[in-house]
Amino acid sequence: MAYVEIYPNRVYQNAVFLNKLCAEAKIEVIGVTKVTCGDPNIAEKMLKAGIKIIGESRLENIKRLKKEGIGAKFMLLRPPEQARIREALELAHYFLISDLKVLENFIDIDNTTEKGYIYMVDTGDLREGVWYAEALPELLKAYEIAGRKLLGIGTNLGCYGGVKATPEKFALLEELSEKFRKSTGFELQILSAGNTASLPLVERGIVPPGINQFRLGESIICGTDVTNNRNVPGTRQDNFILYGQIIELKRKPSIPEGEIGLDAFGRKPRFEDRGTRLRAILDLGEQDILPSGLIPMVDGAEVLHASSDHLIVDLTEVPKAFKVGEYMPFRMSYGALLRAMTSTYIRKEYVYAL
Ligand SMILES: *Cc1c(COP(=O)(O)O)cnc(C)c1O
Image (cartoon, rainbow, N blue to C red; front, side, top):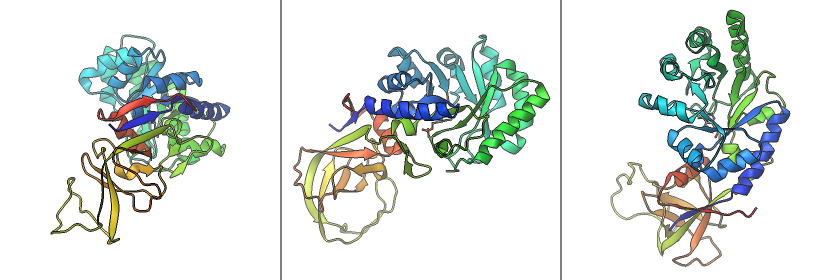
């Protein structure tokens, strides 16, 4: 059975490094565990590294973390369906909100004094948040609804539009916060600007001074920054290793024979004639991984394609003679890891070596 080796102590090293980097810039880190579906062994390492708040997007993940004894405060990064707002209030402390109606729904049943809301502002990436140019009136309404529970404002870049963070984008948050203070006399405590895609600004020391919170997932967990197409300096990338088992090994032509339609996912497959190739089929598929996000750790191996549950790997250029029943290791992109952690068909194995 295919499995993922998880190295929590390596994630710990990344968390220590990034938490320190941000602390030096007076930025608090929220540790985001959603790519691991709320893995308590990962959250535990984040807390041990000095991170105080865990960010999650799904209530099931927070439930899992709490059940396994993770005693942190939680930030819910995305509101749940309306019928589950009460449950959300029971599970989390901080909420990223981007809609006045949703904020009202929360406030209507939030009879505590300790919950906090961060209103999201879209600074150009076109995912969640009120468009920055129209944000002030909406923030004033949010303050009417939430009062002092409106702790701050936030933005998210790099996730939908792939828009990169710049000091100018973050300055929009500062300016808004200043205008808000002038109108209301109330000071917003939190400017929650970044995710992993914003780390280059911290590294270069050019985050505007008012920004005081980053929400980091990918960089801590994978050591990568997909938006900027790089490994994050000072982190490691071997925290999760996927192993698929070879279930067929054969030499076959590189071009299919017959009239070509679409593949199992409605895609038009493309082929190049490279003669006869040695191909392995592994016990993995689109249901478990993102084939384009697999990086073989075997020199010369090349991922060709996957259907729901067959992953085809070209081994022609591999010096080692693999046999059926052997496992092949892969590193994974954020997207591939997300699927692997979500797949119930992939066993999870914890390795505490460094
Ligand atoms: C997932 C998520 C993050 C974490 O982003 P990374 O790129 O993994 O660091 C931060 N903020 C929000 C709102 C998110 O949904």
